[in-house]
Amino acid sequence: MRNFLKLRRNKSFDYSPRHYKGEGNPYKIEHKLDKFRSTAHTQRGLKNKVSNAVEDLKNEGDKNLKIRFLVIVAVLILLFLYIIDFDLSIFLNP
Image (cartoon, rainbow, N blue to C red; front, top):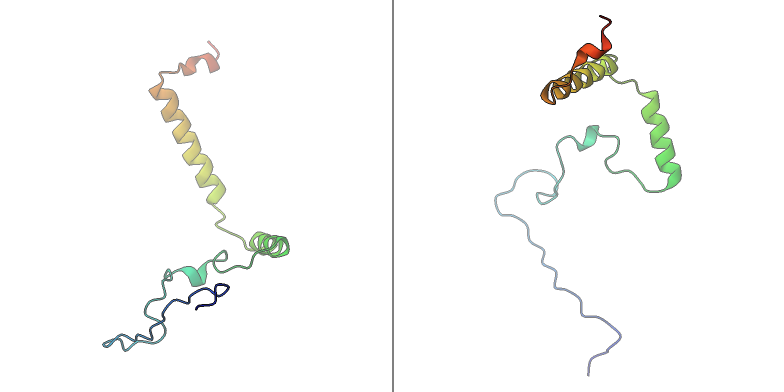
């Protein structure tokens, strides 16, 4: 009679691919750019999140990012106002 307190273990197979000559595990799924991301493979916890945020603030990004973002937002707003047929002449003095 089996022991009811212990669960049955799954079978494990030690399979190695026949024609694989590379290094590492061929079945490991990892994105190509994970080694360049600061958020990939981070540990959990409030302290680690705060320290990661502080490190990200120290790294300067693209200096033209704010200007590019504002130009894109302005173009999208003007396009939206054109689509809804908003009259811009109310902002101009006659």
